[in-house]
Image: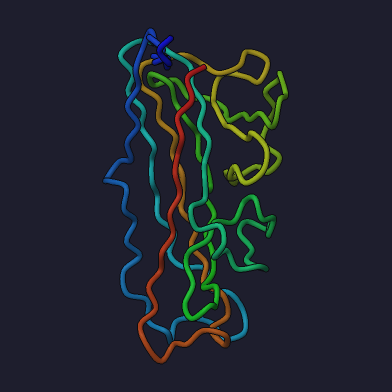
Length: 200
């Protein structure tokens, strides 16, 4: 009797497809930052930058996002954005010679679905219900549990379906005290986050 092996083919046919993109591209260049403009003994908040995640769909659909911090290991402890230093709200911005440079927050604005303004909501873990964000301003990262964000008319109504979704944010970059940074040479910032799109 001959030996055998199986080939399994999987896949899913979905009723709609959506394409996410950042207005102005997915690179935020903070430019040259003079070391003399930074505080030696406390953090320095740099000029904020506005960014917008836009999602275009082939048919009306509700959706959610997860945000993954690809530089979480470089997030400097003690960095504060909008009054919070919770790890889940501060993203890493790079390190130099083993020293963490700082961090940044993503302050969310008012999303819209096909032009209709919406409210931000979230789910954590296996929760069946949508809730209002725990902070009024900052987007949390999915560093533990199944944290996802969406938008709609209310948490009771849930995510709003549509063909064009816009999610405005403000990038709030922060550099830690320079007393622990080797500022005798150029220091490159290196933040990176992945926005994962979820079909609901």
